[in-house]
Length: 319
Image (cartoon, rainbow, N blue to C red):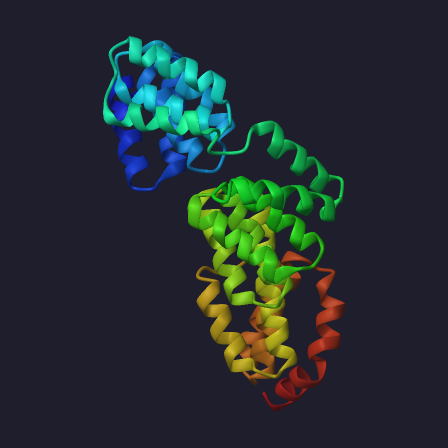
């Protein structure tokens, strides 16, 4: 049965409150597909998007909500706060004056007025774009030089901290990078890209357990985050191979079972699990893994024969 707009909005709000952001976004967008100017759906989608560290994407939703219904105080406040966050101070002052003329004169509007007169509370999009451009060009030192000047003025901007962290990572200054990413996440807990970048830095320093947790957080926030899915698998492989190299086979098996909660069809992971079982002389399970690998990826057969032939030959000769 097709959902009414009212029912879709109720379900979207419930999903939003429960942290099921993908479901909430789908429901809000389903409303906007048929009623693009729907004030509540626009406003709530703006809140959702802003929470992922994308204020410039959220801003048009807040504007549409306010344009559609200017009688709701929260619509004014959300739009004003986002303008201020993006450094659009002149525009924010104009909108604040409109709100006051419309009769909105509560304490929150008074506080906003004081903040706006003190100057921008966040760097502008142009400032952030300039530093991001330096990073994209591989000019990490220049990005840090300009970014840290800006951070001294705006220490609580998660997007700026994320760019600084990425620049430190580019220079292999991982302690500084990790510190920046953690601060960004503290400010914006639902910032999936910062969680992903933190995981990459942790992985590069061999802190595989922490990296895996951070990749999982990024995926929780953004389920279709393909790069995070790929790097999660790669990091798990790195962890298991490290433990195998150290001959910590029991620990490797424990980590595999803890982190892989469902049967894996990844041939590399299944291959590693087979090596762990073989090293523990659990040959039935090892053979099962290797056969599964070969069925998925036949070219593994030569490699697997080379790796396990001695132990498996011994096992087979006794059977």
